[in-house]
Length: 458
Ligand code: F0G
Image 1 (cartoon, rainbow, N blue to C red):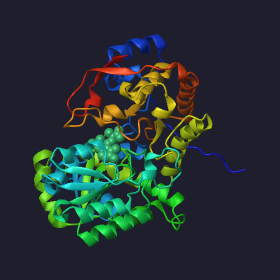
Image 2: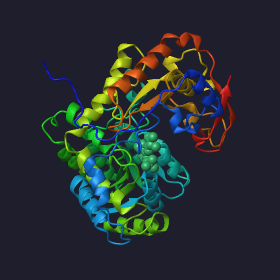
Image 3: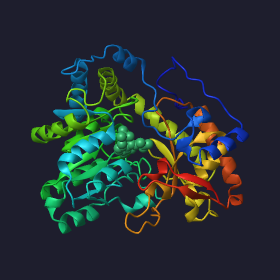
Image 4: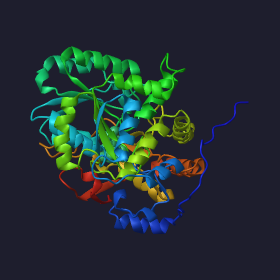
């Protein structure tokens, strides 16, 4: 018999969490205006709002914190991080930032101009926000299979090469500063991009003289899927795979809060010195001097260690197995989810789950509220609220997929917690036909409304 899966770590410090009663949660969520972002964290039992900055650091990372160098310029922590980035990604130049969106802000300040077009695989919302803020346009070239939650395509994060070539051949290439490949593709369900796809994107982009930038928040999880699913990579180490992946890119932005396994931080890295020099100017203005850029020395030190841990070959199997553990339970109970299960989260197809709630009443948000009331579990809507209104018509934009995301923080919860989440969803699934009414908006912000929207029950 094969030995079962178990974590490749043991626990040295714990943080208590408490169950609440349904009556308490009814009260709290009403006060929070049916917006899960408005809850206090103590009002949540199992928090699957995000895997961003919510993971547990290792003893080695904490040890590195203690030896952080807080010098304004030229700290050893900066050089530790520079070495890690150079070894793992092969980039000679890098700039630290306070988080991933800050790296986008700095890099796009150099690259993106009014009227530009930036193709990619379902750009993440902050990425899209930084593009649209500069009056440029993000074009989604993700393969169609990504939008069919039942399709078992192994690389649903892939870019459709025909869609990409159509953009390259119909738009003036001077107006296309880059293509952005998001690894893994968060919006389509933490779905990976294949090595073959990266290679093809790079070759085509070089032909047209267009830069390839990897949005790298979950780069290691992507590498793991390549190792498991793509022919010719089974015997390669994660570090070898990552090195090959980045040989097909010119630059990267990184939210270190995900696969850096730290609580805060980001960076950008690039091959080209000129691009580095230009970005440095904005980095100094927006983030800080080039050798800290919005990060404390201790945090750079912890990240330098985290980047090695995430790619060391022990960590990823456990990580992805846990996400799959939750996903498989739901699949067994016929609960509709994005398949195959992705790297950092289980995405529930809310439209298929709650068939009687009209789309105008925010189906995925309704399901998110039900899950919170059932068990104190907090997920996040990735649907109509997140998609905002059309900037011109002011009508709701209904995305192709209306999902509830359950993002699993790294090294934080056990499979017993996953069992609670699964059973809570099963209970709701069994009474799904009784749920016929959703929510309506009382008040909303003009952009990024999902963070602050106020809702009430219909
Ligand atoms: N790119 C991707 C693919 C992301 O998922 C995120 C953040 C960012 C960029 C921005 O990074 O938060 O460090 O500024 N995603 C979080 C999430 C917020 O919950 O998925 P950041």
